[in-house]
Length: 119
Image (cartoon, helix red, strand yellow):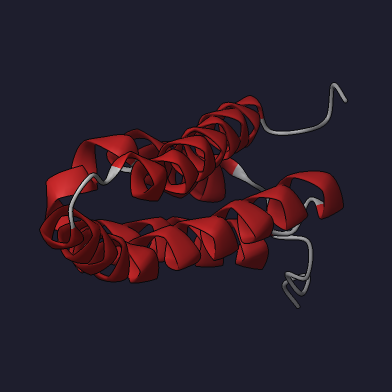
């Protein structure tokens, strides 16, 4: 594990922790609704945040692929997806901005594996 990028590892841990938090939070929200209006509001809120959560989940997957396969491209895709997730639900930007920055910096630090030698 010593040849793995530490920033990408931290980004992966933070992203996975946020996904676990989101699953626990959004699975328990619907059961607390006492009236039909609260249930409708909960359903609307879940519908609005779902694209953000799906994009964040895919970012975590690409983040893990970039870390464990040591591929720059996967790290870059994960970083971009964190940025897209941030735009999809701006109110939750604080949950993915650190992962995004760490992933972009980790991408910049990773060595190009497929660089052709100069002639």
